[in-house]
Length: 299
Image 1: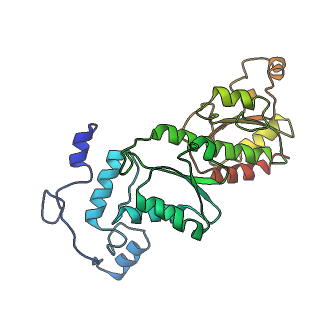
Image 2: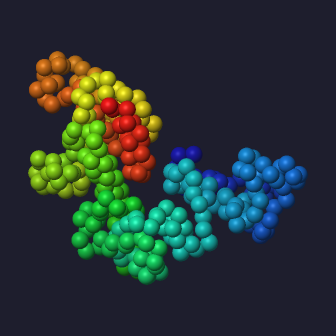
């Protein structure tokens, strides 16, 4: 099924296997029988599919979730009983005390009230980016960006693609800051860093962000050191492309610039200890943990 209107009808919806009902039945039950003790134990352990309690999953809700995931092009979806329940679950399930959330208003009143009144209680710093803009509001502590489109009740649209690009750029900057402070790294090449010699020029030219590419040179400027680091990476895939949603890493001297002489590479600053990253949309904390592990092998 490729067309939206067809998927809206058929995704997640099949004749009921028990009765043959065409319309998805409304399962108004709290608990589900699971047969034997062994079957129940397997369902509760997540080892076999099945329903146990509607608080966890329900066939009617599962049909809605499957349809929404298909329509949104997502691997899965989770349905809640209310928008406030969804908002609280996302906020409190993904953020920790000390984290920061930035939002672009106007928001639904209940959401903004929750942010402003209860965020501080949970140790979460809430930043209103509506006036100064998202790019100027993001910091290394920003862990979530919240935006609603169309807004309620003023029906203001937000450019979700631009918001996503800015959020990704912040993740890249967090990775770059980590690398710049690591003792095994000699220098980091990323124009988003204030210490970059062309930072001012980059701010003027790259108004939408500084991109997802980061290069860094190891203190031990040898191919063997770069190989030791690259071969220990788990989240970063060794590949020469760029701009993907998943993070990539490569050794330019032996790949993209292996077609020129060592003298030309040296002239252009492409050292044997240089590693290039294409930072994806993974959480920066996970990427940093991967890099931290790999850089232990740089010595």
